[in-house]
Length: 171
Length: 94
Image (cartoon, rainbow over all chains, first blue to last red; front, top):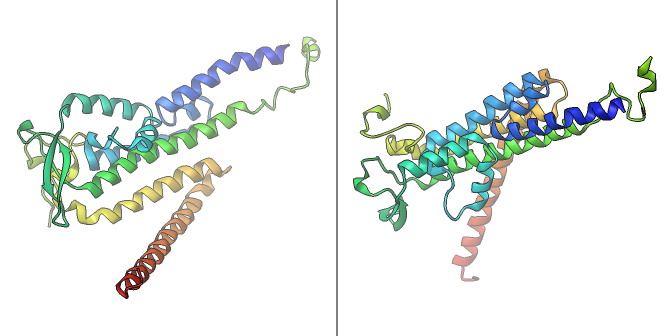
């Protein structure tokens, strides 16, 4: 009974670690006590995400017609949530703009209007790499969450699973 | 030789605006951005997999090398395939 109470008392904390591990990459491992791995995960995933943000700007997030990258970016937690909120405020109205790409082809891309007062560019390769950076940061956070789930779902070695009633501990 | 200073571009905000808007020649360096991507993926994966953390750096380095070699081989293979297919079409078989 003591074992059951112990496992149920830590179950809520484990689920909180999973949720917080999604919201802040690395925080889940920190909460379960593996602080070195938590630091590595936090630095690596945030570095990957913000490098993508630096390359492509907030337009690297939540791109239209790319649901795979959109969903994986949201797996990265708070950086995506904040980035999309900023994007919706500073880049609200994209207009179709005809540009000439590096191959000399005239193509149409959704860009901020020229009078928006913001610098605009046309580099689909770099934009794609930036989107991939942010999306892969989300995939890595999912991998970290799977590892965290495996850790918290393992039975505690200090508590024998077959112990019942805690009779041995009563004395 | 320093590249264009992004701070001199009016209205440019790092992390909000794309870097290539202020540094246009960044586009020719696109292939180099695969290196940090592969390195970070290897570090995170090996940190998850390695039971002993001190073995992670070497394992991550080895994994990065294997991934980059695989990329190169796939690229070479696809290039050969592309040349063969275009030559086959040019010969009038397509």
